[in-house]
Length: 518
Image (cartoon, rainbow, N blue to C red):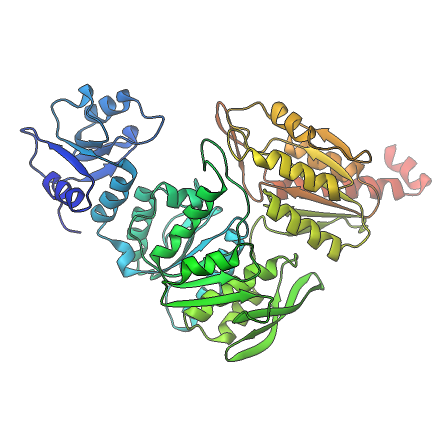
């Protein structure tokens, strides 16, 4: 990578229209060897970025003590006197531009697929990756990278995701790693927050897909209203060469208008007008199946996951792969082997009287789709649901998820789900205030693992238990920080094993039982 000085970065920010003032000192010379916004990791020769609502001047003092060579900020700080300062009009835009330059614009050497939508981003990302990797293996190329809400994998490191879309510094660092080890493809989830907070910078994408949109992420910490949320998602199109749009989505016409500037717009869905069309969607032998029609191909798609709503995600992935020119047989093969942790994972008791589904569903749209699928796939069976809502954001979910659960579930267990700055009992109380069905049983349990155990034990015969909102996550966000927790899938396995043991013990003949007790 090219050696960069403070002057080089100042000129970059000037060209981007971001530089307000370059405050120089006698310590101006030399190479910038690191760029970071975390004071605790600063090394000698670093450029320190003062960003975030929680920023404190003491962070700058610590960075200077650790060897920061200059700092970038929207305001000048007394603590920074003595080292150069680049004053900027927008620290987040500046951070993205500086990160791209520091890491040598690695996105220009990759082909990137971006996925946005209120629900289904993660599942679609893994569907795309499964097909990409099948195709790349045939060509003798390295497997692709993925940045998702589950993990960040850059060809070297596989880390649990901190954010759906990494911060710009982390994003560019991972892209640089991928390029350096010869990874040429990336599938990434693109959140509305990532667009609003400029994490993507000037990254160009080969193809972007817009899955769906519904009211979510509206709070003082996220988006002020639905229009801002929608606009943030639509911004992704300005980064894309090709665009794939779901004709079954609400606001499809508006989304298509926003996508009209792309070189190629590919539509998908179940309507006859869709270029990539799915029909005869059903679940057979615990697999999702549907008929696929697209230019140059007609045939059956088989995916080893439940949930008829996942046909939408599969059609999105197929349209992406079609836009990239990937052969149909690679698409069929890749999807036939795909798995996604924490998404529609099914577990059953030995006697078949308990079925438990673990899924990441966490907003109104995903709840409605999931319950509709459960009614179709498990007709007439009682349904128990376990869920919670996050603290400090997405306040509308407390009403939305309560209403959907109240309408369709026979019993409800409320649990903590990243309560953050709020007390989980308070959040549960707000959810309960929107549950009015007289026949519903609603209980708050302060531990998710215990809630799963109770639900499995207390559910009526042939019940379907839905454990929602966390998927495969192994942490919870509380006011005092991040705490580890048992992933829902593990809680389900333990609870079903306990249920199986009790059933076997109760089924033993009295004589056998007496002997074993002695």
